[in-house]
Length: 250
Image (cartoon, rainbow, N blue to C red; front, side):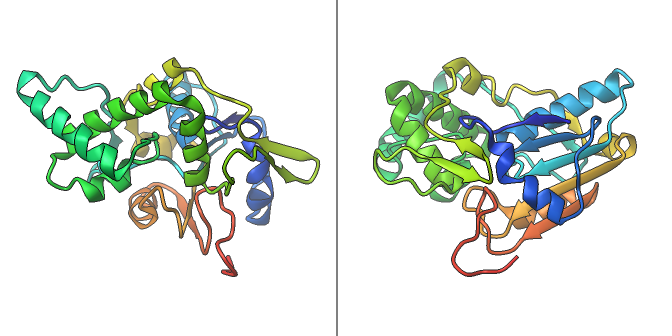
């Protein structure tokens, strides 16, 4: 199995092993699995395997970090990064920064859907560029605060500076122990186009899990789109890391 974890986490597969087993998925040597931002890496890796004629078993995406801005009507996923907006958009960037500091002092790489709702007056492609720049700024300004905000958004309910690990059986998913390099964040969206139709034809099975109560992603839209190409499960009452919210049942 080749597993691609989320930015800023270590050992996060332990969060999902039981979930996969509950649905009858037991990973083998040829399977590819990716969680959140790691799902983008898993897709990229799958495309590379297909290009080289390598065998792929199951391709499993867990809460794939796809945004409304990226999903289109066709089967090709394009994620454009670092667009040069030119001189005439400098005033937009300045205005955006001032408004952003009031609305969201720390912008993480999982904040885009929230920004899109608060900045509907800015064109999506322009907003995307401003968003990525805001991520880099927030990360360089305070890496610890960035990770604290990120873990909270993912669904780890941390309290102030109390660092902890989420334990599952004898394994653990570690938080506040794996700070990524800025270069890793900068290259998070540097991926080639993903052809879901080609993936559908070449993999043994394409499976997607999304969470009903995901506060980062538009789960319904992702499920509607990706269910064209594979099996899509919506896990009821769960957040981005598939932990139950309240007393809701799966």
